[in-house]
Image (tube, rainbow, N blue to C red; front, top):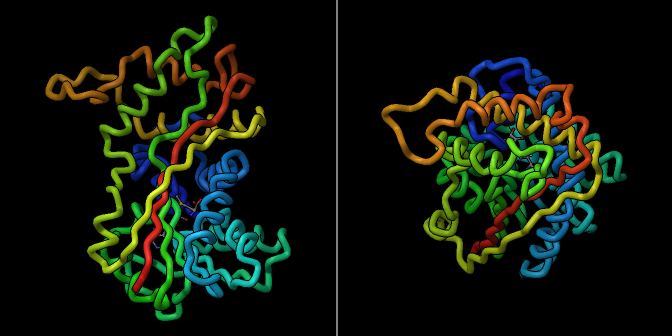
Length: 310
Ligand SMILES: C[S@@+](CC[C@H](N)C(=O)[O-])C[C@H]1O[C@@H](n2cnc3c(N)ncnc32)[C@H](O)[C@@H]1O
C-alpha cells in the first residue's frame, strides 16, 4: 500500500485529518497500518457485519444474485456477504489495488474464489459500467468519496430494479480505555471523550443522516438501524487496535494542545496533560502503555440505512 493509500485510509477512521507528519507513534507506519486496522476492526467487531448482512437478507425483496461492495477495503464486508448469500456473486470495488489484493486473499481463505471478484475503480470518476448489482453495500466508504451525491446517484442508476442499497457508517470513534478510568490511570479519566471532541472539532466523520440524500436520489422505503459494537475479549489484538487507532489520533492532533485564544468551542484545543496522557499510552514502555494493558475493550456504534430502488 502506498503512503497515499494509508493516509486515505486514515480517513476511514479519522476522516482526512492525519496528514500532519507527526512521527514517533509507531503504529502509523506508511503502508500496512491501515489495512491492519481494518483487519483488527473485522476481527474484534466483525459480528455487526454478520448482523447487518442478516438484516439485509431479511428485508431484500428477493435473494440477491449479484452484490457490489462499494469501497470494500480489506474485504471484511465482502466475505461476510459471500458467507450470508451463498448463491450470490460478490464484487468488491475499491480504488486501492492493495486493498483489493487483501480482499482476494480473504475470499480465498474462505474458499470463495469462484464467487468473489474485484473491480478497481475510483468513484470520484464516472461510475464503472460493469458495476451493476441486486444488492449494493457501502460500509464506511460513502463519506470518503468526493461527491457522495454523485456516488449515490451512480448506485441508484446501476442497481437492478427492486434492488437494495445498504450504507453503514461509524457513529462514534471507538473507545478502548475502561469507561470509568482506573485508580492507577487517573489521567485517563474522560480522556477519550476529550480526544473524540477534538477530532469532531476537526470535522471527523461529518457524514450526514443519509436518508435525505437517498430519497433525493430516488430511493424509497429507507430504513435505519443501529448496531452497538462491543469488541471480543482478545487482549493482544485489542491493544494493537488501540495503539494503531490512538496513534492516528495523535498524528491528527499533532500541534494541538496550544491554548486557542480565538476558538473556545468544545474540542478546540486539548489540554497539554491530555496529550501527555496520550503519549504515555502510546509509548512502548511504562505502566500506561497500551501494549502492556489487559483492561482494554473496543466499544463503538454504527448506523445502517437500507433503501430500495423502485
Ligand atoms: C474505511 S475504508 C472501509 C473499508 C470496508 N468497507 C470496511 O468497512 O472495513 C473505505 C474504503 O473506501 C475506499 N474508497 C475511498 N474513496 C474511494 C473512491 N473514490 N473510489 C473507490 N474507493 C474508495 C478506500 O480505498 C477504502 O478501502
